[in-house]
Length: 151
Image (cartoon, rainbow, N blue to C red):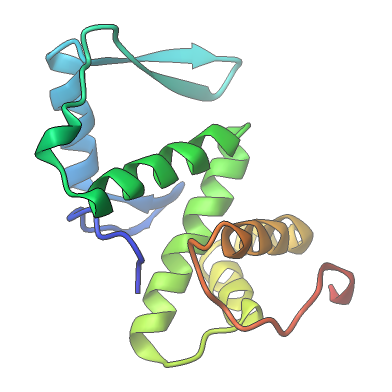
Protein backbone atom coordinates (compact mmCIF):
# COMPACT_ATOMS: atom_id res chain seq x y z
CA UNK A 1 0.00 0.00 0.00
CA UNK A 2 1.06 3.58 -0.49
CA UNK A 3 3.63 4.61 2.09
CA UNK A 4 2.24 8.15 2.40
CA UNK A 5 -1.52 8.46 2.42
CA UNK A 6 -2.54 11.79 0.91
CA UNK A 7 -6.25 11.30 1.42
CA UNK A 8 -6.76 11.65 -2.33
CA UNK A 9 -8.52 8.85 -4.19
CA UNK A 10 -6.96 7.97 -7.52
CA UNK A 11 -8.33 5.99 -10.45
CA UNK A 12 -7.00 5.01 -13.82
CA UNK A 13 -6.96 7.96 -16.20
CA UNK A 14 -5.94 8.56 -19.78
CA UNK A 15 -2.64 10.21 -18.75
CA UNK A 16 -1.98 8.20 -15.61
CA UNK A 17 -3.70 8.12 -12.24
CA UNK A 18 -6.33 10.83 -11.82
CA UNK A 19 -7.78 12.30 -8.62
CA UNK A 20 -10.69 14.71 -8.50
CA UNK A 21 -9.63 15.64 -4.95
CA UNK A 22 -6.10 16.51 -6.10
CA UNK A 23 -7.53 18.62 -8.92
CA UNK A 24 -9.75 20.45 -6.41
CA UNK A 25 -6.77 21.05 -4.10
CA UNK A 26 -4.75 22.52 -6.97
CA UNK A 27 -7.70 24.75 -7.89
CA UNK A 28 -8.07 25.91 -4.27
CA UNK A 29 -4.35 26.76 -4.01
CA UNK A 30 -4.48 28.56 -7.36
CA UNK A 31 -7.61 30.52 -6.43
CA UNK A 32 -5.93 31.61 -3.19
CA UNK A 33 -2.87 32.75 -5.21
CA UNK A 34 -0.68 30.29 -3.32
CA UNK A 35 0.50 28.58 -6.50
CA UNK A 36 0.47 29.05 -10.23
CA UNK A 37 0.91 26.77 -13.18
CA UNK A 38 3.31 27.89 -15.89
CA UNK A 39 3.72 26.25 -19.27
CA UNK A 40 7.20 24.84 -19.89
CA UNK A 41 7.79 23.75 -23.46
CA UNK A 42 4.98 22.34 -25.56
CA UNK A 43 3.33 19.96 -23.09
CA UNK A 44 4.62 20.41 -19.56
CA UNK A 45 3.03 22.51 -16.84
CA UNK A 46 5.23 23.53 -13.95
CA UNK A 47 3.61 24.30 -10.62
CA UNK A 48 5.23 27.21 -8.82
CA UNK A 49 4.52 28.11 -5.22
CA UNK A 50 3.96 31.84 -4.73
CA UNK A 51 6.02 33.94 -2.34
CA UNK A 52 2.90 34.30 -0.15
CA UNK A 53 2.82 30.56 0.53
CA UNK A 54 4.06 29.95 4.06
CA UNK A 55 4.00 26.45 5.45
CA UNK A 56 3.66 26.56 9.23
CA UNK A 57 5.49 23.39 10.23
CA UNK A 58 4.28 23.70 13.83
CA UNK A 59 0.84 22.52 12.63
CA UNK A 60 2.13 19.21 11.27
CA UNK A 61 3.54 16.01 12.68
CA UNK A 62 7.08 14.95 11.93
CA UNK A 63 5.62 12.18 9.75
CA UNK A 64 3.73 14.76 7.66
CA UNK A 65 6.80 16.99 7.38
CA UNK A 66 8.94 14.02 6.30
CA UNK A 67 6.29 13.01 3.74
CA UNK A 68 6.22 16.56 2.36
CA UNK A 69 10.00 16.68 2.04
CA UNK A 70 10.06 13.26 0.39
CA UNK A 71 7.38 14.37 -2.09
CA UNK A 72 9.27 17.55 -2.92
CA UNK A 73 12.41 15.46 -3.48
CA UNK A 74 10.53 13.16 -5.87
CA UNK A 75 8.92 16.03 -7.77
CA UNK A 76 12.27 17.80 -8.15
CA UNK A 77 13.59 14.74 -10.01
CA UNK A 78 10.83 14.77 -12.65
CA UNK A 79 12.11 16.31 -15.87
CA UNK A 80 9.28 15.78 -18.36
CA UNK A 81 5.57 15.03 -18.58
CA UNK A 82 6.42 11.60 -19.98
CA UNK A 83 8.60 10.81 -16.95
CA UNK A 84 5.89 12.12 -14.61
CA UNK A 85 3.23 9.98 -16.28
CA UNK A 86 5.36 6.83 -16.20
CA UNK A 87 6.36 7.34 -12.55
CA UNK A 88 2.80 8.10 -11.41
CA UNK A 89 1.48 5.10 -13.34
CA UNK A 90 4.09 2.79 -11.79
CA UNK A 91 3.25 4.11 -8.29
CA UNK A 92 -0.45 3.56 -8.89
CA UNK A 93 0.18 0.06 -10.27
CA UNK A 94 2.21 -0.86 -7.19
CA UNK A 95 -0.48 0.46 -4.85
CA UNK A 96 -3.20 -1.53 -6.63
CA UNK A 97 -1.13 -4.71 -6.74
CA UNK A 98 -0.01 -4.59 -3.10
CA UNK A 99 -3.65 -4.36 -2.02
CA UNK A 100 -4.36 -7.63 -3.84
CA UNK A 101 -1.23 -9.67 -3.08
CA UNK A 102 1.47 -9.84 -0.44
CA UNK A 103 4.50 -9.77 -2.73
CA UNK A 104 4.74 -7.53 -5.77
CA UNK A 105 7.63 -7.81 -8.18
CA UNK A 106 8.95 -5.33 -10.68
CA UNK A 107 7.62 -7.71 -13.36
CA UNK A 108 4.12 -7.51 -11.82
CA UNK A 109 4.27 -3.71 -11.96
CA UNK A 110 5.55 -3.73 -15.54
CA UNK A 111 2.78 -6.10 -16.65
CA UNK A 112 0.08 -4.04 -14.87
CA UNK A 113 1.34 -0.85 -16.52
CA UNK A 114 1.54 -2.43 -19.99
CA UNK A 115 -1.94 -3.94 -19.65
CA UNK A 116 -3.27 -0.48 -18.75
CA UNK A 117 -1.15 1.55 -21.19
CA UNK A 118 -1.03 -0.64 -24.26
CA UNK A 119 0.43 2.26 -26.26
CA UNK A 120 3.58 1.97 -24.13
CA UNK A 121 4.61 -1.34 -25.71
CA UNK A 122 8.25 -0.81 -26.56
CA UNK A 123 8.82 1.50 -23.55
CA UNK A 124 9.66 -1.31 -21.13
CA UNK A 125 13.12 0.12 -20.38
CA UNK A 126 11.70 3.51 -19.38
CA UNK A 127 9.03 1.85 -17.22
CA UNK A 128 11.57 -0.41 -15.51
CA UNK A 129 13.85 2.58 -14.94
CA UNK A 130 10.97 4.39 -13.21
CA UNK A 131 10.25 1.30 -11.09
CA UNK A 132 13.92 1.03 -10.06
CA UNK A 133 14.11 4.76 -9.31
CA UNK A 134 10.94 4.65 -7.19
CA UNK A 135 12.25 1.61 -5.31
CA UNK A 136 15.62 3.29 -4.74
CA UNK A 137 13.80 6.33 -3.29
CA UNK A 138 11.70 3.94 -1.15
CA UNK A 139 8.36 4.97 -2.66
CA UNK A 140 7.68 1.34 -3.53
CA UNK A 141 9.14 -1.93 -2.28
CA UNK A 142 8.87 -4.52 -5.05
CA UNK A 143 10.84 -7.69 -5.04
CA UNK A 144 13.20 -7.63 -8.00
CA UNK A 145 12.74 -10.19 -10.74
CA UNK A 146 13.69 -8.36 -13.92
CA UNK A 147 16.58 -6.18 -14.86
CA UNK A 148 16.56 -3.60 -17.61
CA UNK A 149 18.74 -5.91 -19.72
CA UNK A 150 16.07 -8.68 -19.46
CA UNK A 151 13.65 -6.72 -21.62
